[in-house]
Every structure is written in C-alpha cells, then in structure tokens.
Length: 152
Image (cartoon, rainbow, N blue to C red; front, side, top):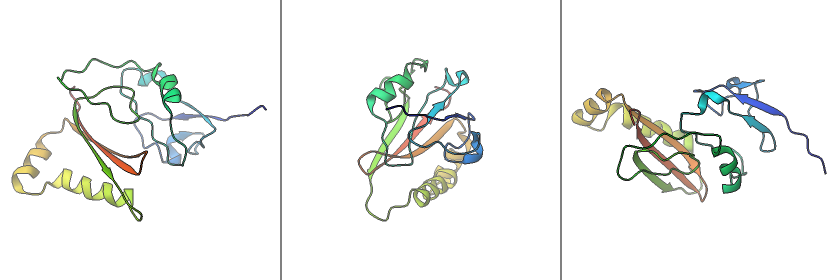
C-alpha cells in the first residue's frame, strides 16, 4: 500500500500548535512529514503531538540523529520526554485526572512563575531572565514541567 504524505515546515521559535506558524498554514496531521530545518541543529528539540498518536523511540531516534546537542555543564543532566538533548535544570512530572485542562494549568504555572508567590520569589524570578519554562502533556496521563537555564 502506498501512502502519500504532505510535507509541512515549522517556522522556528514559534508555537507548534498555531496553524499560522506552519507553511502552508495548517498544523500537520500524524501521517504527514514535518521538516524542521537546519537552523535547529544547535538547539534542543522536543516533540509533542496534540493527538492520540505517540512518538516511539524509533521515530524519535530518526529525528534526533539530525540534532546536534551541545554538552551540558551540570553534574546531573535531565532527559525530558520528547527531547533529543539532555538539559540542565529541573524536571517535574505530574499525573492528571479526567477534566484536566492543560491550558488552565499553564496559565496558573506561568502566573506563579512570572509573579512569584511572595515578594522575594517574585523579585528573583523577574530578575533571572535566563530561566526558561516548558510545560507539555506526555504519555501516561502526565504533564511535564521543565525549567532550564538559557545560558547552559
């Protein structure tokens, strides 16, 4: 059986789920090919699907062989689900239940992250612009929160 696939190109440093960030303007379906471009070669790459499809290690390995990972500068690097490269930072995985809304969870975490829960934390987070936050849904009814240092 021959399967024809469309090819989509993601516009780097944009929201994966927004159709406007894709050429020709539609988020790809699971059976479509995605071209990630050579400009991503020195940056960590994470893949998350918004459908029931999952990225198995075979597919991830095929994608990750085109990604050049910089060596980490920490003693205990982390390997977030869906990432090709190890990172320095903090990793939290939470199991969710029925009715969980990722969008609401992201808003709450981002509010805490940007405002802090007290004056001392708020000041520290606003001053530390090198910290990056990533929140994604992963396999096994879990949410993954990754905090990384942009300088590492």
